Image (tube, rainbow, N blue to C red; front, side, top):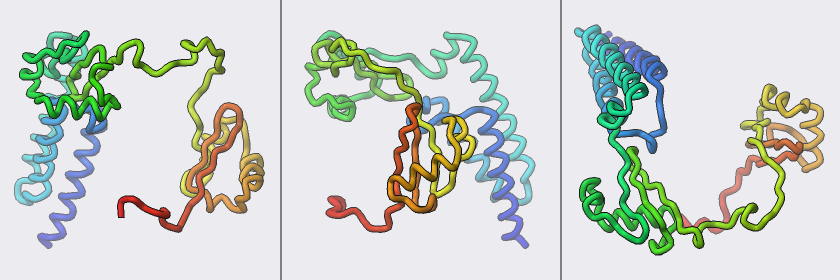
Amino acid sequence: MEYLNIVWTSIGSLVVLFILTKIMGYREVSELSMFDYINGITIGSIAAEMATDLEKFEEPLIAMVIYSIVVIAISYASNKSIKVRRFIEGKPLILMDNDQIFYKNLQKARVDVDEFLCQCRNSGYFDISQIQSIILESNGKFSILPKADCRPATPKDLQLNVSSESMLSTVIIDGKIMKENLKHTGNDEKWLLSQLKSQGIKDVSEVFFALCDIHNKLVVYKKLENTVPGDIFE
């Protein structure tokens, strides 16, 4: 009976945590600020206690709801006030500008030289002389502005006229037709099946996922059961 109660309280804590997270809003882990990170740890700890403390189930539940209300209030205040936002989330730091590295800001951000160079390499810059400015954002990520003569050329730079593009619609996912997405492209299932047939695909179940652009070009990725030939990670 005790194990059954643990199962039910675990499911209950998960449901409550999910609902509260939806209410508070969520971001990707890579985009979490320090405040968001602390919130996640704290609420997760309270939810774990609620799942295991069978005698005092209500107390962690009340604590989690109260904490969520406080988080929502602070988030609202942050959206309304720049000063509150700066206090809670911090402000960006300029680490490098015009070939000058600001050592004090590196110390303030607790970023050493190895981490600094690593972040530059992760952004595709192995030679920092190609960089005009580096800003450490409040979420801990580097924003890098390359020098004008080192940035990738654009069609505008080359004086080329290009047509506008839009997002591709996913019309098949794991062998299932996404009818609403397909309808959004202005096509129907008959058109889709004929397109698959023209690419040598007899049944939609053979498709892992498929994309359709504004020009009705269908890009199909089939389900492949075989392993990757010459896998370099073996």
